[in-house]
Image (cartoon, rainbow, N blue to C red):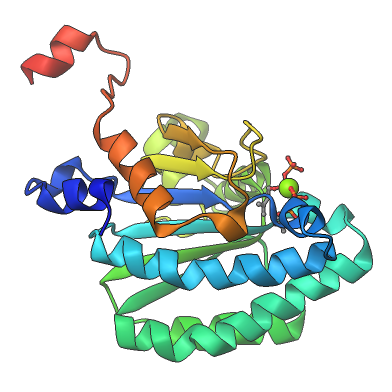
Length: 249
Ligand code: IPE
Ligand code: IPE
Ligand code: MG
């Protein structure tokens, strides 16, 4: 037990928790290089951190966890690294499926299907099907995901549905995103020391609280996840209002 975990668990008003946490799992390559290993060994070590963080998020009663595993831009990497990551995702889904069923995790895929291999799509579909009646926590695995691509796909679908310009509202755009039932991200964590969003959850991050840490993703501990959540719980979100207006609420 850690102090921030204790503090979070002691808060009885669960509305203070972030409902939706997004994680930009960055720094795998540098983690490996710092240890004199190959970059891909960092991806292997990074994949192993997803399960404990998912379990912890469930324990804290967070409802949605979105993890950025492969961006649309990541196809630009050397083909060896790309194939390694894709294989890892496939194996990881296979390995974790039963665990997700047992833990009541509802699995979602967020991203573009095009360019993903049949083998990866198959694992995604099997996992979605196996977890479709679960509702303890939703895991959104973001693969071949780009925030701009998500918006472009939404606008394309709106045009295909003959949506009239006067009917275009923010609410309607939200309904055309990938996994439209997933709410705005309350908290976005980025490991690895860079302070940027790298095309993650663009629409749903309009008012997200951001948490950056130097820690490389494979070293991101349960304690640090709790620190991030606790930091979120102690911030004042104003959504454009003044601090006084928010406090009076
Ligand atoms: C994040 O780690 C994983 C992916 C982007 C797939 P990186 O591979 O980007 O690690 P660094 O940033 O090069 O250290
Ligand atoms: C963001 O990390 C994407 C994922 C973690 C999957 P990158 O390593 O691709 O981001 P940039 O290129 O440094 O912005
Ligand atoms: Mg990186």
